[in-house]
Every structure is written in structure tokens, then in C-alpha cells.
Image (cartoon, rainbow, N blue to C red; front, side):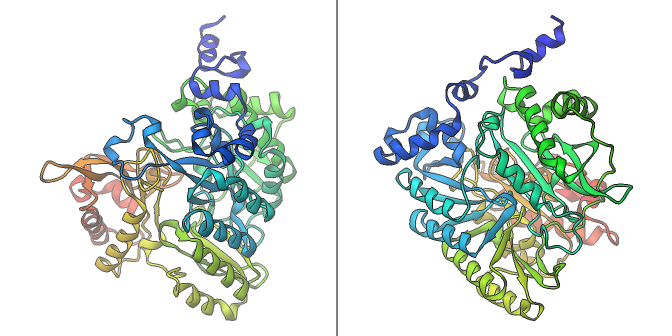
Length: 550
């Protein structure tokens, strides 16, 4: 056997005949499909309680239904990674409600609101993948929660785990005046055919999909495992450009074009092919190399396309053009005209943090001023659709009464934060409240600053809040303060841009949480003083003296 084949077999690739599990995660999946845990939750765990849960289900298969144990309160960030799971685990769960394409309506929102208030202590956070996360959920209540969600067409199936996660789509699909193609039918077909199917319930790791025809490219296709981006070919035919291999975390890579044009009717099968390649050829030996991006990097796009067409599709895809550059703002915040003459109203909660009562308010306003249709975005924002022009300002005023702003400051509009140490077992520092407080402080200190500026706050070295592609990315860690004490703080990444560059890391550039506002004020003022006309923050960072970035 050639050495190259031996090396690939050592990565645990199924297509090369290597099926024996090479780590505990793979062993657990081989022992029992994660989808099978649903019935055990219904029949056993919800009735016998937390102590009856098999550890392999608790810290593994529960994820196939959007369930993670929360971090036990009172455990500081210095103990993250050093304590065994059973000491970090609380007896409560985070539950992630899967919302493909961010598609909601007043009935769905009221159901989530009721679940939040009845079973989750009022919690509700919008994620940067259009989901809503609840906390403080007890295992005894999970079957009832599922029944309530499923009655309105929602679920938690494969919201986490080594599965095809939520499919993100443009919240204005079928609505936006400038969209290239309405991707709603293709997104819905992929979800209907493949989500919850045993065919893809054992992938090497999580698998993230973007399907959108949005001119803004609001679904950040560049950082998804597979992305279909609306495009018009030389013949004027609308379809999709196909990208594969994007992802962030500790080894970020942008997705790469395969150069193929995908017709709308082909999209579900092409998605099936790409996902099948990941399942069959993906690396399963080491978890930190088990994402599709590593396979794409090793193979290159030419080989990936060849395998897709010859081994999975059975036909060649035509070549196609790249999509146009995305619009400057991707978040759909503000008041904008729809293609039918009505308007949509996009608004900004603070770092995605809502609660059950606010979800009910949003549902009421969506019905009062629109048709009841609501969308979540991939920027932790929300949009109410179908508002008559003459009622848009009244809706904006009504939202503002609940601190949901349609014309927010740049700091509120472009700040994002992950869950953080409040609930997450991987986190080292607090994030959500830090972000909320930081918005207030920066608005007070820099009231006239109006240039686009994204500030993303992450509680650990992973990239749930996309720190590498933010203008100012903050990676939570413990740092030394002026008194030599170890305190919460952040490593700083500067000048990241989705699809263009990852943030610049400057040796030793860190700040304590207490000094965060001072640092951001200082660097933003320097940018504002030194920037040339039309120069973005990322462009300035690329040319700025290192001293000005400290």
C-alpha cells in the first residue's frame, strides 16, 4: 500500500475502508446513533431525572437534540479545562431551538416565549446562526418542550452534535428588492430531506450550511462548510456559486469556490454530495482536524470538485462566475422597502440578548404592524416583515419603548457576543453582560462616531462570536493586571474582514476586562483621527503603526 494511502487511513476516513473508531467520540457514535437518544429522554430520563442519565448520552448524544449541560455557577474561568466534566456540569441544560433560515412568525415566537417563561427562567438569546437558545431547562420538561415546539413547526433536532447544523438563510428571502434568487425552496427541501436522517447523523464533526440569494451575503458564506451563494451566469440564468471548506475556531480558513454553477433544482443533490464527501472522506482521528476545511485544504478545490462530480453526482457541473462582492452592511437593520412595496423593519437587541416577555412583545408588534412574519438574522438581530410604509415609524417607536432599536449606534449595531462563562463550560470570561455594558460606555464616550466597526466578544479561544473576522475581535482569557493579579481579560485581534482577512494579532496586545472600554476608545479615536476619506478600520489597521494599535 502506498505511504499516502496509509496516512489517509490513519485519519479514520470511511471511504478508505477504515471504520474502527479512533477516539472516544467516534466510539460513542458507533455504539449508538445520536438520534436514538430522543426516545430515552422521553421514556427514561425525563421520568427518572438527571441522575439516571448515561454519561455517554449526557455529554455526547444529547447534543443531537440541542442539549448541553450548563456550567455550574461559581466556577471561575481559571478552572475551565482543568476540572472533569462531572464537576463542571450543572443539573440544568442549554436548549437550542433550531430555526432554519431564521423563519419565524408570531405563533412560533409566542410558543418560544411561553417555553422560556415556564421552563427556562425567562431566558432567550439569538445566536449568530439564527437560532434561539434557552437556559435553565430541566430534563423532566424536555418532552413537553418538544411537543410545544413541534406543534408550531419547530424542533431542536440536530441543533448541535456531529450533524448538519441549522441551515442559515437570508431573513429577507423572497422579500428583498435586490435579491438575486429566492433560496427558500432549496433551503426547505434540504432541511426536509436530510435533517434528522440517519444518512448524515454521524459526521466527523459539525457541518455548517449557508443557502442564500441575498445581495448582502448576510449569511457569511465564507465561513461555512458549504455555501450556496446567489449568482447570475453569463446567459442570465440565476443559480448558485458553490463554496466549500470555510470555518473559524483556532485554525480559521475561508471557504473556497469550486468554480461550479449550481442550478436551483440541483442544489439539494449537490448539498447531499458535499455532505457525503465529508461523511466518507472527513478526518475522524483527531477532533481538532475533523472539520471539512482540513480535507479541502489537503485535496484542493480541483480534486474536491472531481470527487463530487464523479463519485457522488454522476455528472459534471457547468462552470460558473463568482458572486458579486457583498454589500457593506450584512445585517438588514433599519427600515427598507420590500419587492412587494411593503417594508421590513430590522432592529438590534443588545448582543442578541432577549427574554420570554420580549419575544411575546415582538410577536404582538409583528401582528399589529405587519403580517406576523418575523426573521432572526446571522448577526444576532431580528426583522419584522410586511409593514405598510405609513406604519414603519410607529413600529420603530414601539420597538424603541422596549430598547429594541431600528437606528442603533454603530456599537450596538455591530457588537456580537457568545454565551460566555455565565452558562458555557468552555468559557473563561463573561461576555454577554460585558458587551451590554460596553455598548453603553462607548455610546457615552464616543457619541459622534459613525463609521462601520464590528466588535465581537468571545469567552474562550473558539470562535462562536467570529472574533477573527471582526474589526475588533476579543478572545477571552485570563491576564495579569497592574497588581500582578490574574483577572478576566482579552487577547485582541484587529482588522478582520469576512472573506478577506483574519484579524491581526500583535504580540502582547491584551487588556483586562476592566480596561476594555479604555482600550477601544483609544484605538477608535486614533482611527478616526488618522483615517483617510472612505478608509475602513481594517484598511487603517493594515497600515497603522503598531504603537497606534496598542
